[in-house]
Image (cartoon, rainbow, N blue to C red; front, side, top):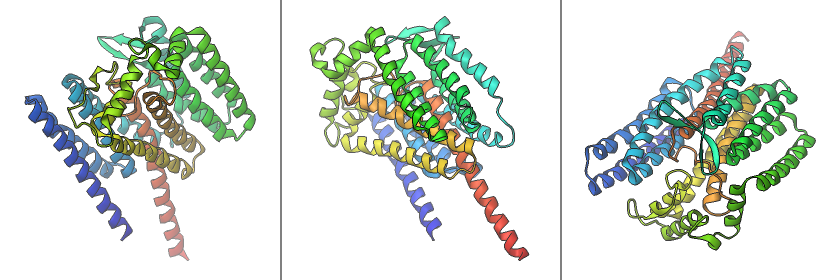
Length: 413
């Protein structure tokens, strides 16, 4: 009976989201009729439905997490298409590629149960990717973190996030603390040289939590906090763009037409949205620079309202809690640390960007997972979700094997 009720609730949630997406894109089609808008009206709800309903029949997955992630991705496509049809179409393609990447990492995590990962190869690949921006990179918003190859721009540090989680989980599961610290130190150094302090903060925070959970050593935790304070002071002293961001965080109105323009417009957009929002396509938050990346949460509140924004925030919290639950249910030390680190990364990145949008903390140049525009960001987020779903799939398999073993023992007795 309980299983039947859960399936009924899952179907109701899926149908509700499909209706929401279809209605939203249909409204945009009425506003600006085109072949692309008609295609998106049917394509995005369809890809959500297929990926939510049929993918769990291929592999064992946490259906609630899958529904939330697919909804956030589809919402990102919707908002981006409303702001820029070209970007919305590109994001829809990125979404499809991300689903394939998620499936790959579900399989990859399961494969690692039978065959140890080639850690040396993963370290080499991640090191090459991290160094690429220092050699071929271009600078954006004060950080030299982007590389353009064959006409395609991507952020290597976003892709290395996934490899970093696997490498650190492997070292910590083997209690190789020095190796884990050495690799983390290399990543921090390169990110500092790139001036990509937002990504460095995410890396550092995630690794610190993983180390503490793996060792339960308060000394490591204390040293980690000291290192964070020291690094923050060094970053503030060395980089002028960090000083500007701290200054406008304290008082953005001192230069509201210059450095403080983004955060001022973000706050205005949030206030103008009110409780229920201005309505899809009726907001004017496009005046915010980087509105499709750093400030997309402000657009969501502006057009859908604060209640809808709180619902989105609750979804991220639910993803984090489900991920932690998956880590706690794992019988493998490696899988537990891997799932925990992946969950913390998504949660920390979400907190940093939303906190920056609402002026809770200084603004950093990171993206909102699953929603913000960018192939690198969406791809890495989907890969990380694939890792969590892979661990969940292993947990379900182990539970099923335990049940079969218990039944066999009962038959023998």
